Image (cartoon, rainbow, N blue to C red; front, side):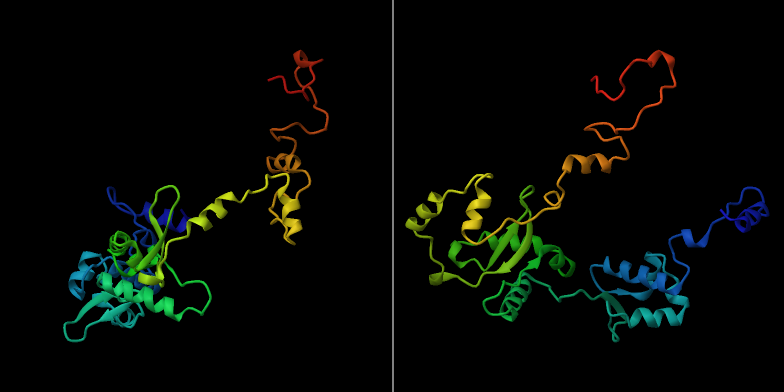
Length: 258
């Protein structure tokens, strides 16, 4: 607390508490108030009137400050209905149903470069625009027959939750099962062990990707340096230790007796 703040608190009558405006959460500058207002509007699930919105979220400044209200009304994330006078948050995509979600995935897939990677979307960004995105995609993945499913998904290895969603371009008669012969050939392929892998890659004109550890010729020394001077778990520094306690004389402190 600054000296100015201390002097102000000492002048207060007993029983009163000094409150610093910047720590109240309401914001002291217009930009901070505007950011708080837009973030609060994002939590509203339906259009809301200005009075109800301002009172519910403690943003009465919108009712008093016409300049702030104008900036709020013209914000790129705010939609103002002139007829009803209501306000609503404007997400990246206008998604109101599962069909809208499918249409968006299809349009992004068609807009991607021919022969390039399919334009998938993160489930997190879909949920920003549509709260029920995850449930809708889960329902799409359960559609039968499998050949007619309109979406493909990537899930997390640990929790199994959907991470990315893609429009399935190959469906119906174009979707054919993998031949048994190809499966046998695939599983018959042997992956070289760690020792022979570099030679096998070199024979094909390839090389292994370099990691940060491979660029360090002495990883043990690197780990020691990372823990401070002479305090690595793998050993001690080479400098001599000055014995301060006489009962330790004759004991080699450079050795690990554990």
